[in-house]
Length: 117
Length: 164
Figure 1 (cartoon, each protein chain N blue to C red):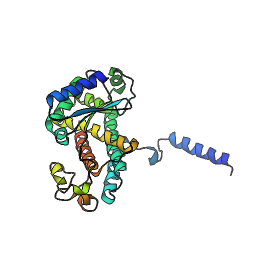
Figure 2: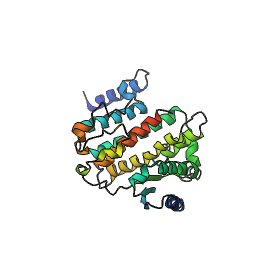
Figure 3: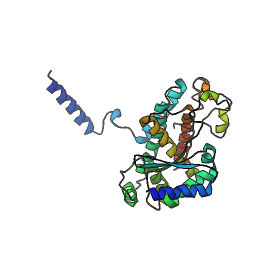
Figure 4: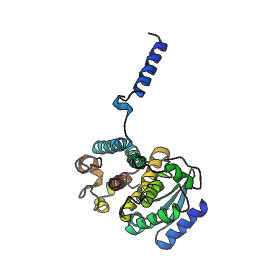
């Protein structure tokens, strides 16, 4: 398994040399992580992962390999994210023009947050 | 009434209800309904509280997981055959195989036509899974920001799954 994981890591490094890639092993599962949320959310990276899944991971009968990112800012207090909405301008699930620190009271009215059928 | 009699009556009640087509509603609930229930729970929690991030993160993940499992079962996906194609032992509908299974189902099922850009949404189940592990098993907490990302990804995946 390690060989495949390292191969995937190298593929990412070749295609996206400007992000750091690292591997976390957890109970036999492998998380391949990059350190950029922006790159992770990009169409290029998402399609790259999809292509890996379809033509590499499935073809090789692999499982237990996951892709994600570790944002360096993920543990920062949310109260500092005054421009938080910029991250989600394309998402109808996040209410724009508000400080996320007040999301519970003001920024997530039920009518806007309605995922269930 | 003795304890034995009580237990006998409970056993009788359970057997009677499992063996009848008119079982109480609480005995029957589809995975799709459970998926929706988890979404409603996240909605309910987030509308009232901001200190239950770990509970919410887990529900986002399971909402997606149950929805995918529902679809694979509904469509008769050969999960056992898919497991055999893997090079290591896995259980059907394990967390490590569910994403690959749904991708295999969609890409190899000629009856399903789907845009690859849309299919890419399914990638993010990995993010949800990672946060669910952190929430349930790690000595760490899921941040507010990550909860918002979970919400975004969950919504995108559920939207995509509705097209299948």
